[in-house]
Length: 438
Image (cartoon, rainbow, N blue to C red):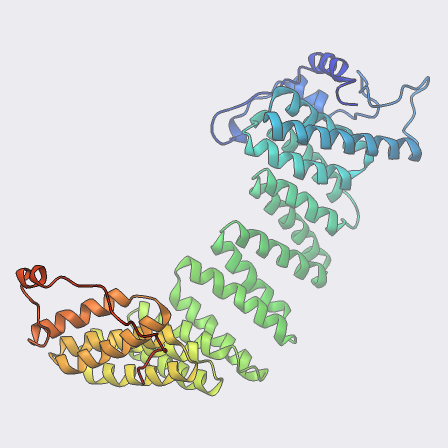
């Protein structure tokens, strides 16, 4: 069908001056200059404007398409979309491909706003990816018309509004998407409709957060907290949203304030399971703020709470962080104690990697304290685990060899001795019967 009518369509394009253009780099809609005739023709009603698209039937008298004719048009447009996508995948965004993309979107208008928005989202993504600036702006202008139409309804269809916002997002017009929700929110506030306000705020918070607008997203989640006074589960979700965005903003003191509120909510609702991970996050925020006493208190609370919940991974992380604090404060005895506690925790969870890492840290601690025998013992334990895991064996062997050599317990023969005694093939080899280490 697309091939049959390509010449007629090109003549129609010439008539309305709709030519496909490309622009190096990202589209910048504010700078794209479109001819008024081009805008007028694209925005005109495709069902009644002239010249008439070849896919539309000719009538003796002007009339809208019947339901049957609309179904036939929908099938033809589906076929056109498939053919255009196939040509795009084979040839790229050629002039003909861009023309048929825009043609399909324009004709979808006849089938209703839902069908048109779906086409704009799909085609708009392709146009954006291929830097078709003029076409992107034409779609954005059409979205503004749809916005005005939807907002003119006494009770706007929030589902269609959501599709409109999604289309604005595809075209990277996030400010327009936010503006739609802000208009709806203002109306809901004026009408005193708290249910609508809550739904709109939820959509707005999600939109802002997904586009990394953390400050307004945090403020929107804070506003949502006023709608969850009697719903603890909802309050928890909104608190999480506030925390995520303040954390991403780097406003750690404010983040801690809301994290503490969230701990309180978990306690009120008898949900102890999430608390250790949350108190660990609080401890780390205090650490980053260099409020070390508070950090140590929360690390200790995390360790106790995590063990009570059998969350050995969280308990291990708390001990490791706390050990790092004491190490920086030059308190080796406390560090040694914490590492020993971490070994016990890792054994509870059969975490070989955690055990290996902790023995490594212990070895380094003993080296720094000039306790070579203890360091050698720790590295030997780490090496046994490393060989079982097939991970970092060379590292631990090198650590051990260096220490043993420094202690005079590793004999290194001169090179001449090696050359005088070449290794011969084994005689009567014995079968390996498994690791003999206890």
